[in-house]
Figure 1 (spheres, rainbow, N blue to C red):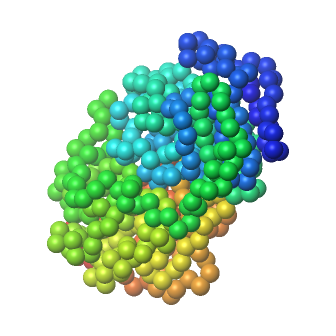
Figure 2 (spheres, rainbow, N blue to C red; figure 1 turned 90 degrees about the horizontal axis):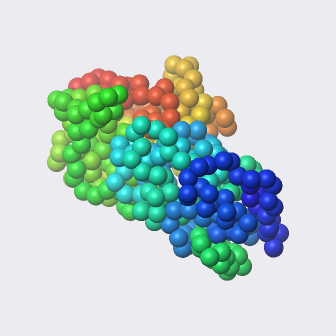
Figure 3 (cartoon, rainbow, N blue to C red; figure 1 turned 30 degrees about the vertical axis):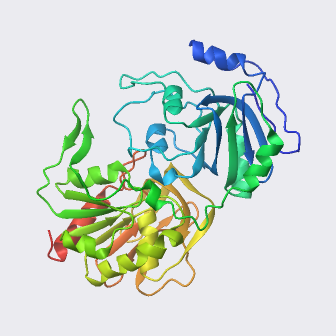
Length: 414
């Protein structure tokens, strides 16, 4: 395998044995290319990795993060929260279940690129309708393979997530010094409002419920409470969980006003996930959330929505060193003492310092004790940093959707 060495001005690589045996023409082509790198990943600190390109060609750039999930790469790649980011997968068998038409979390693809240890696996799953490499090329996503992802992940853990340039050229023309210069000029994630570009637009009704084996996605009844989802980059599975419980679901664009929501007369509001710096999105979102809180409208925040609710209640957010990205994060529910394994994807967190008396901490990470959930003290509102809808990940936390609906009932709505 190609194992590019980290660091140094003249980053180089070794040939240490052959790649894992694959039997497709595509895989044999990648093996043949191992001695001639066709792609490069260059970090803002100058660290360079050489490997074999796949998917789309050309240049891409973004914040480089790592994801430790062992399943669900398609759901990860279609999660709008990854807008502006390049994902390093620590699990090596990416591509093994191919791509299908059902496991998508948004209609548009926001991720900027992916970094893999092994060549993209051949699909072996009855639901597969496409090869991952072909899908990446179709959507203009660059992949680099043959990278020592353990070494890269340690580097990000030691030095923090940072911007990076990714280049794929089948001819092997790789200008590392030019990439280093370009990587240093990439805007930092801190201060970026990416929600408008991740949001799928104005008023949209949603009826699709959860997936059932042998039957696909079911249609919700729509006879329950009316829930407005503010779409900062919402994952489909959030809305599926609401529809599955009989809710009538309406999604609204990221920059929606409280007045526009009020006209729809909802029974509750979900502040959805999304990408970017919550403080930047909060410039226009926080005041609207405060208006909803003043009306005692039940609110449930998820991921970015959790951060925005916290800002509206007087807390502040901070950039994490390398964030939480994976499907194996233990969290304790301080209200019940229950420990759940969660799916997470965030690079910002609600700060512990100077927490206002308007909120209390309801959940904490058992990895690093960061805040994973809050609730308003005197208002019907709560939020979690992680993803109770999973996709991918365990379903330990889907009870939070029931808690939200119980709260709606308790305040006399729905």
